[in-house]
Image 1 (cartoon, helix red, strand yellow):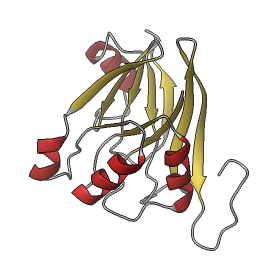
Image 2: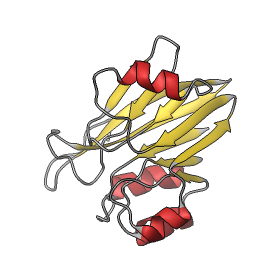
Image 3: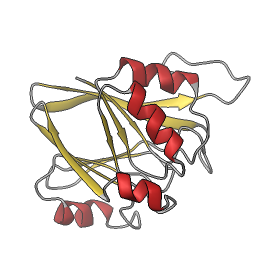
Length: 170
């Protein structure tokens, strides 16, 4: 099962590279801060399966359509999706306590890619933002594979700025 993970799209136009990944994926995760319902509608139309949550910048319309936390099980892997996890210091311990029944936590908010594992085995993944790189060298998203009850092939994909060449990973 092929996964795409994104967050913090902030109502900006999604890049073609990301749309291609969405079209190839079995499941798309969005960890909040859509900002407009049009992005939710567009992803909902193109994704085979969409799992999303609302973020701190999402208004009443998105909050009415999306949960604060989404939990799904796919291929024997238990996922939770949430927008905010708090400060980076102590994140693994704090999230392991908050999500003891989860294998993978997908989150956003910071626009900073993150891939760590808590002592409990909880994998924490932040795909960054595909549209607002902030302090990062590139806008980003993640892909991964679920097979045989495990998550594998987790790849952070940089999205080149206009005029930059596309890398083999992108």
